[in-house]
Length: 304
Image (cartoon, helix red, strand yellow):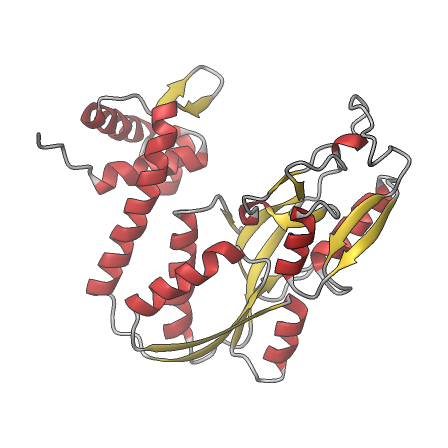
């Protein structure tokens, strides 16, 4: 049996509707009318013989089939864009020393940079992963060319590329955060009157500062019981149930879940810092590649 081919244009329209949560906003993003968007989605549904959206007068949501297709569609679009870029983009050559904050989608970074190296074999890319403020200091000293790191609240330097929601995270079988909910029974090993245990990076980390300030405003007793200079160390401590920590929602590893009953942490803006003068031929492809690759795998929002 020969299966029909999926049209990349229809898939891109479908993914945009899903990410924009509506036909009108997807039309604005793609420069098309709402009726044109609806027609493309209908054509896609005809090809696969399944409905991909549930439509009501109040909301639009993916069907179960639509959720499955969305995963494949993002992968197909990423591969299509990578192939086209490799074939038609002008040659890119040079050397770039890049610093990347360890909170920037850590489980996705290595595969993305590996694919970038295959797509741009003439680019010599040196990558250092660490804490944002330390990497930015190294960039100011001329030891790095560019840094992808976190913007602090109110900061205007750097070029924003992604906005991500922050989340309290804890071990899947831990009950620290559930204990804070008024309608939840107090677990025996973490009575309600005990301070909330935290696993954090050392002072200077924006996520740490945000967490402590948020808990203080909410008058929630807390104590830092585990500190590590390594994000992997903090994640390991949280997975072991030693305490609650803070991660970007897209960085949630399998051993952790979002904690409940804690105040909202807001969002963080990831930006590019450094003097890109004379390196735009390297910077633009790299940033574009990272954005497209992440859009195919995680739910980050482009920064305004």
